[in-house]
Image 1 (spheres, rainbow, N blue to C red):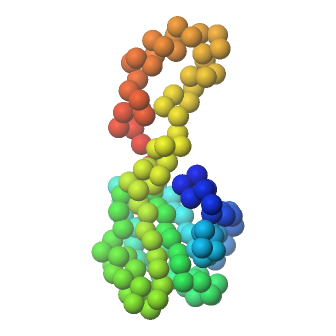
Image 2: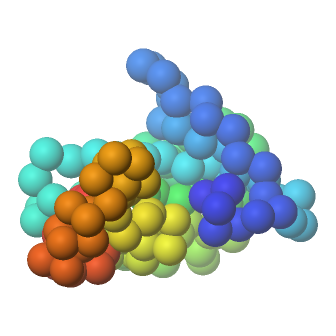
Image 3: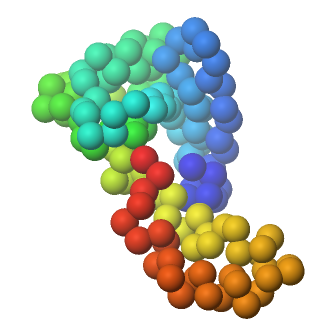
Length: 144
């Protein structure tokens, strides 16, 4: 988040029993966002409405109107989007970031060949030969 929103303040607050908040994000307008991050074992699954409801509860308790759910899943359920719409009617804003959006946020931050600078010190010819065989950005391989 810090890399994508340079003028923002980002504070990791997550821990076991954190009350549904992993990151406190303060944007350039000094608006406070509560962020819940979910890493799921099966990235092809969907994030359900329960996660959204938990975040909304945390937002009410923390007296803030802005929140985000970031998940490594492929998509959010219809009911999750429906809950976001209903929350918006009540003056609350919830952004949903799925695996695709998260990958687009991370792509500019990750080097094409993170191992190359270490190996290049003693084996520069080897590094160049391997780079020719490995597509930039690891082809279709994704982190999540």
